[in-house]
Image 1 (cartoon, rainbow, N blue to C red):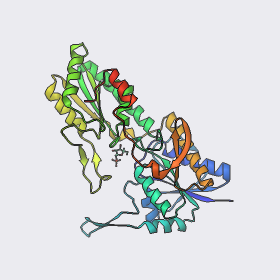
Image 2 (cartoon, rainbow, N blue to C red):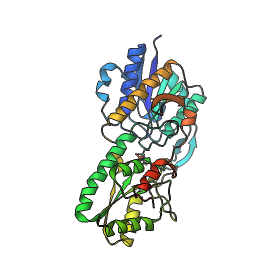
Image 3 (spheres, rainbow, N blue to C red):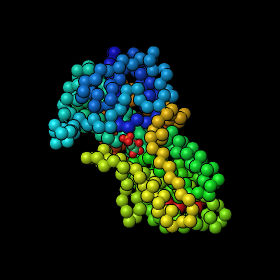
Image 4 (cartoon, rainbow, N blue to C red):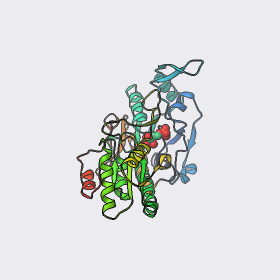
Length: 361
Ligand code: F6P
């Protein structure tokens, strides 16, 4: 029987979102003869009644390698907590308009909705499933902080970008005998910092999961210098904090998701400058980690996840999402998967890094 299904991308973008869109359209059309419509600007667009985009194999072919999302993504749209503004533009209260989201799905005559998102977007999807909405999920985030899947797409590309940045910093650090500090994204999880740090040969990796002591980092820099290496590379996750200090935010919003981590790289750089006799420079990598083409791993993962989501719709497995477990593509309940996944300070990866002489502060 012919179905009309929708797809929506929510939260921050990640390399591979367009590949997911392409895969869902191709699988739905080729395998089942279904029509796929794209909902624009995440749940915000659904609530605002934005016109949808009809997708077909004719208009998704170019999407495999394209960064971002052609559907747009909104970080703010939560139908369970929509801000109401005063005439002065201040938020006066938050209201639950989830019934409007359900009504909007009915009006669009969608028999299923595929939601590609991180923990915030997928949590909203789960609550809508609890209200009876036929939704399946695709896990997305460069942070790789979602439990329930070994990897999210977008992460591998972000790690590659951060690793390339370290490689570039290494040659200029070596030329000038400098200490280079690189701040990377990841929110409260240190996956990007840890993997890029290992892949890019960092001397110190500072993670949110391991509160650091700057003295340890300075000792490492001095030890390298005494051994004849006059430069060092330090990777700092944006969510890292010193043992006796706090996380740094460059935007403080009304809610946790509206607050933006950032600034710890400069704090670390200043502190190193005070305890080591060397020039220190700080690079904040920022959104280049999210932009641009997905690499081959992320195109593959996004494609597999998109096609799996279509299978979940065919099986009416509402409330499930595509996942990667032990190298196999599978599916897991969204409810379990939206818990956060952090770096275990006792993990093999951290132990290997320590065995190579990397310090965590
Ligand atoms: O969750 C992805 C992410 O890029 C985080 O690593 C980062 O903290 C945040 O989003 C940045 O959000 P925004 O794009 O709203 O600045």
